[in-house]
Image 1: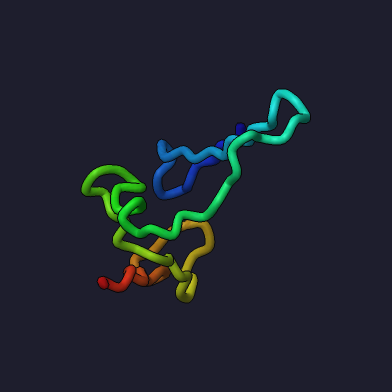
Image 2 (image 1 turned 90 degrees about the vertical axis):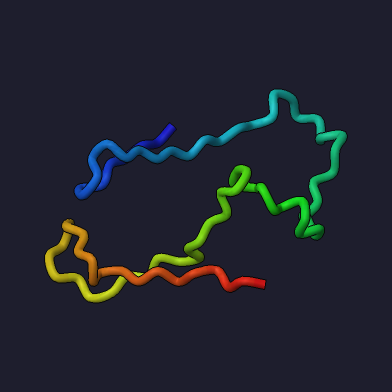
Length: 79
């Protein structure tokens, strides 16, 4: 497990988990992309649709300290 903290929010944590199959046998279930958008409606939880698509960095004033004008939010377009 990997974790880190951010200077402007030291209590915020993030991690990546990696799993490996116990045996070398292939899975009996085939992995396929989800093409039905209705299955993705509550992917992040009921009524928790993400609003921001990207966080893009702007000019940095002081390295290591986030400033309000450092980033812009690019929102998901509504259908």
